[in-house]
Length: 188
Picture 1 (cartoon, rainbow, N blue to C red):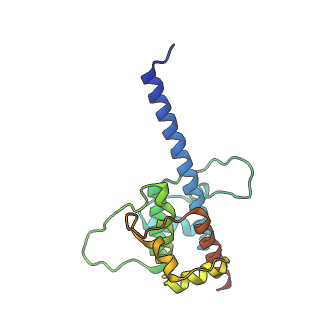
Picture 2: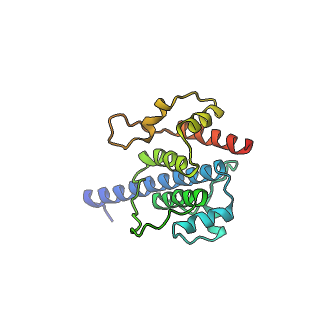
Picture 3: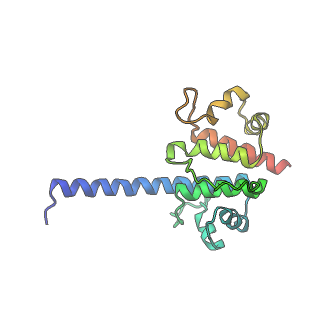
């Protein structure tokens, strides 16, 4: 059976999109694992956190979402898409700070993580909210990881993506945040 140019093109586009999604899932699973470690969240708490965002997971499901960074073997992970990652972050905010008072308005479900390019900034913003951190708290967290910053240097990471002073949060910067937060939580 020969493959015409249109069929091959469609197949290649589909294959590429599947591979791209898989990379995003893996990145999201890595982010979820690092968030749990930095926030000192165990499997039972993970299930509770997801439940705050109306996601029903068992402890086994939650454990299957976490990456074992010490393993060299390929891992069969329960994929964590952007919706699940955001649900976890929103649930973490409720878990750490308590639910918002009911003001009679319907809950808005706005997806603030539409792509892999914005995921790190959204994680940083939501972790700041979950731990009720001020700019000075963030400076201290980064200092714990050996990164010296001022409040002014941090502000662009919390801007909206289209803002002229917006700065994309790269993996190295977010990993420094996780390392600093882990150190802060262990010392507390």
